[in-house]
Length: 332
Ligand code: CO
Ligand code: ZN
Image (cartoon, rainbow, N blue to C red; front, top):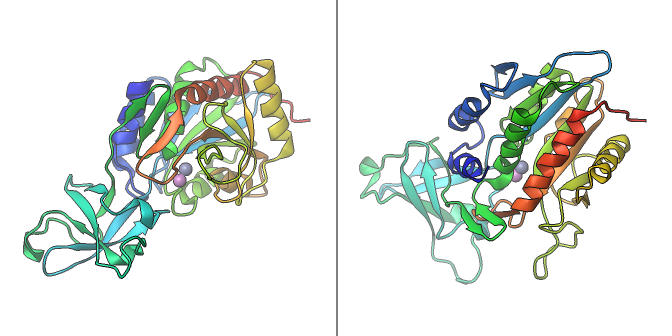
């Protein structure tokens, strides 16, 4: 699974430009899904299982896209001004490397500031691709790039760019492979454009028209020095979302997830995330509403080029997901 995680995190896929990562995922699942299609926005939707009287139509969602940047202006010296696609924190940017979709690498630099210890906003930064001038610059306005950072193993911890949300993509791929004859009609949605406002999941949820929805995404942790106050810790098990700033999980879904984790003797944590949201919001609010929840993977340094997860959490999230989908579901 680690080599799959490496392949998924290292493939670029900024919002709206998910073609490359979609092809990687499609190749992985082709032999295991009952049916695969790509919708108009680019969501990759794979069905496993068929409708039955006791089973439900379930939508799972993990987003394929990752935060990125887009070129807005090239100056006469060949330096590129850019803006964010999704939540880029200025303090993680300077000195970092990016790579454009055509393969061109770049370094993020900043203008001189009054106080060199203060982080300037993104519009005081630029990307240097080593060009001698505008005519020599291979990048044009509208070209997109993502952070460049390899996957590194630190004991049980895995660090890379784009763990948000490729770690959940990896878990969904493995679950799809493991589930044999599930009692439900399950749609595995690898969604687009989550980072710019859960846009892909919005159309996918309407199309799938599920009876129950689960998103898989990373969540933040409260276990770093003077970090945010939050119960979730790395390595203490996958998190069952109770609430974030975009949704309140259906309490029946939370109960079902907790019951299943306890029955399977899997570690879990309850999550209240005060800032952030996931594809679950779009599922919950589609059409006339759907009971929805979210299985979260604890992750440090979310939206930095070095997002850190614990491999035990990843494996336990996979086990919990498979357990959730293997039996009939009683939401009473
Ligand atoms: Co994100
Ligand atoms: Zn995410």
